[in-house]
Every structure is written in structure tokens, then in C-alpha cells.
Image (cartoon, rainbow, N blue to C red; front, top):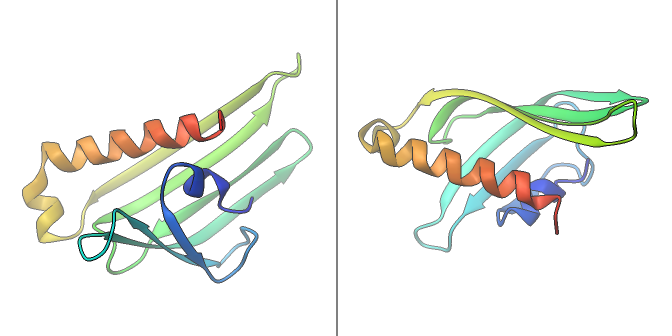
Amino acid sequence: MSWQVQLRAGLQVAASATQIVEDAVCVMRLGRAPLAMTIPCRVIYTITEADKRGFAYGTLPGHPESGEEAFVLSRGPAGGLDFTITAFFRPATLLAKLGGPAARHVQHFMTTRYLHALDR
């Protein structure tokens, strides 16, 4: 709950709060200046349960897509951990609309990096 999944996935993160809390705003960047992709989001909810932690954010204007993404870590009855990422989106910028399959590739690439972020 401190942006570690995003940071470990290789994103630069500037957030209004060091801990992920509802209504926190973050601006993530993918890549290096001057070609870095800007990814602004707002946390729309958090989950704090005995065996489940997580959050979801929604995109803000300037994000290449319009949608939401949720990250949930839960502990099963046997003590194992499950990390679930749920996302839905549509292109929000001309570049994302024109990108078609390439834009979907970037989404898949980032989801894979998020899933491997817990291995680090």
C-alpha cells in the first residue's frame, strides 16, 4: 500500500500521499524524458480486510486510456497468497486510439511487470 508494485514494475511515481489512500492522486511515468508516457490516476477505493489488501485507481485527464485498474493481494485458507489485477479501459487519446494492437501490447507488458513486481 505504498506504490511498491508500480515502482518495482519500473514506473516513476509522484503521489500526493506516500501510502495509498482513497482520493490520493499519482502521476506515474513510463520511459525516459522527453518521450516518457504520463499516467495520471486517482485512488478510488482501498481494501483493508484481515486477509485482503488492495486498491483501485481510475484514470485522470492526460492518461492515454480511460478506465480503472485494481490490485488485490489476498491470503487463502492455507496461507498462500494470490495477487489479482483487474483492469478495464478504452483509448482516451488519439495516440492510444491509433495504437490499437500496440496499445494493448503495452497494457499486457505492464500487467506482466506488475505481477512480477512481487518477486523482487
